[in-house]
Length: 395
Image (cartoon, rainbow, N blue to C red):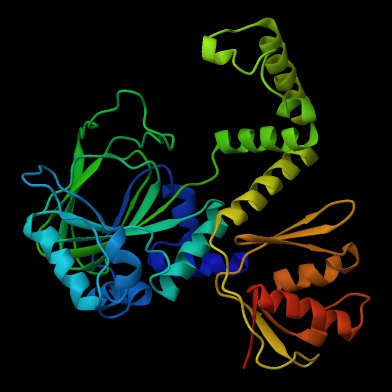
């Protein structure tokens, strides 16, 4: 998936809010409610029958369920493996009978369309994206809370009433602050959502929700690259280049356990900050640090499914990128380091132009690959990318 394809995928889900308007005026600044939207966004991501789609994933999700409730009167059931979709429905019913809302975590790959929307966000915001499904009965309530990630909510079935604070988002870190309790709502807006409606909540937006009927909604969570992330990427990159940063802090490895702060520690930290300041004078260093970070992020994504070739490739074979394919090419003095989700491949420097063409072109014939190479090399490169899942053969 190249960048333009990712932007187009996001724009279709955000419609009628334009892609540029969302990122220029809304993202990270304020919440958004698109009410009375076209239910096509539901069908596009989870099909015409969301219940059937979810229950069909019983093998992957029944034993991973989590749940929440505003005020618990009884403990929830335990998640467990079930033999079929009906068993999954029966398990969910047990939660609902005790007034719990179920959470289906890590549902990103429940459908190809949902996986592709998540991958589009991965590409655009530069961090891994995840999807959780919430399924509740009428009358269920969530605690007042805020999330550490930005969230796009799409109502799939039934109705819910959302209460969303009008205060500016706090943009919290991923970890919980010490002593953090239930956040205050302050002045808030109320939204009644139906299938096809969309909400966007920046991270740190206080909210709660009530189900006014049986309800299913998607919560797609993501976070942009922050200033902190960029600075950390420079420190990570510098530590790859500079071995002293990888040595222990202070004279003894157990110094911090004894709450000791000594001069060697202060000197090491000061020298490192000085090196970072020197790096900031170079745009190339900053650019390379961020590229290094992106390459690491790709390794955190799920591996693409491998392919088995049904017949040998030829120069006339036509291939296309896998719908979830994305990549970063890191050029070192000795080798090309090709990073794709969950995998990296080392490739000869002489085919850099060929590899960049394969990254930038969603679909092509093998013989169209440029470079001062023969068809045998073109076929070999294509075969490697097909077998590792980055490319698929067009029938």
